[in-house]
Image (tube, rainbow, N blue to C red; front, side, top):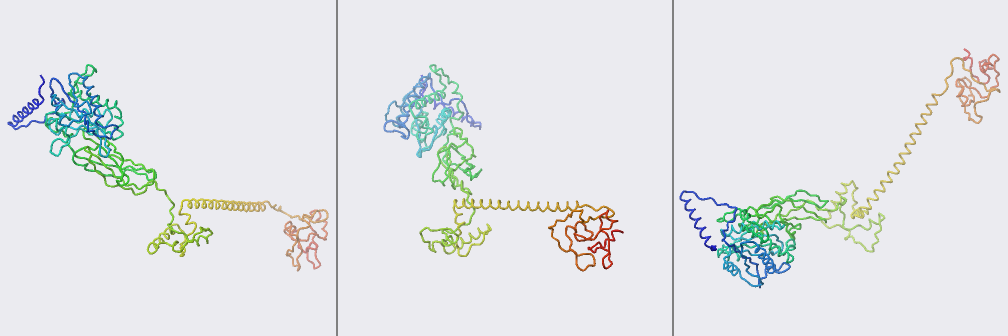
Length: 596
């Protein structure tokens, strides 16, 4: 005969009270009992109730490809069909059609069939349509909290295997202090364990694509059936499955204590700070270190804004987040990439397990990303003096007259500041001072635009090329001139060294008689040489002849006959002049010293 579920709870409570009194008599209180087996004691015949959420006028969320009430019915029917293939279990549904049922009516139906557990099937959506993942809601009342927690942990592990993001096993307290969700509240009031299975989000693409048709919804129900079979340790002869070992492999918890992993977190994340990790302004890349903490919960997501909080990115799973055990990484890195010049103001927003958020302080950068580097040129006036442009050869025939006021700088201190900026910039560039007239040169005006800067660069390149060209020609001519001078000096030195040295003894000088040909060209210019004799007037002597004879000077042609005794040597015969001086004819030179 099936035992009444309420009687089981009553007997357990009495036994626990008796143990507490017994230990207190000896001054010792028992420690919480931790068990890995299923804490829920069932009867000889297991009865479960499947509750497809919503129905009738209560459509549930309509953010999916069809109303939630239709999706839950498809999944619930598939769940019941699959679960009925296991042995020793009876399965009921609160509804098999699209009908209206209150939450109390659903709980009452489960109680009427003496159910051991009620499983409510749901799909999720959020107000801002940005939350995603799977979660289980359980009671805040012991021991129903422990029953729900053990099943919820097992069910979430199956959803993890399907690559769904996990939002955890959670509780929520209503305004009256009991359970917030009506189906759980109504079931617990009747002594019946109940959970809500929120499979995924229908309004977020990453989840919605997995339930986008009836086959996927039915597959979700079959997965639920196997999770329930594992929780109760069922077998299926028809399917050839034995899950009996799973009933003793559940999460350890205390049925008399609310599991810390399910306690509601009512405060936002406690700490959030940003700092610069690395940056490359030219490449448009930056990495920020994000440090966050939630002392009484778990971090699930984060998003970021680069415009000071006006818009945020889609939610991103927080690295290392595991809502099942409420674990997460405290330090992560946010990598940013910019494709246009920008001065971003970054704000990071973190979400905890109950969707409470904390925003960081705005983070700004010291430079502009992807900023185009321009030449460091002085700032100029807004207008260019037309007279100055025309004076420099620049035509400004625009057909519009520019007044003096239009071409002037702002009045007062702004004009003085602008003039000082121009002067400082020109001094730093080594440029001459600007004339007092304030006229702007064409060169400076062109440099204010990228096109003007390109023109200046080309002109400077051409000028530099011309300087190198002509400088090279000058250098080449200089080298050639130096080489020519060196060659002349070398030739002159060599000529001196090659001059024949007179032989020792008597020197013989050839005469210019009829038998010998003169070595002096007839057209060689003659000029007077001063004779070493006492003769008053110099004798004309050829330069070429003077070089040959060297030791004495005489005219090219001589009428004085030579002595017979000296004819063999060819030396002129010594004689005397009318004055009695010794000479050689008409040259009046004393040759007697060569006979000594």
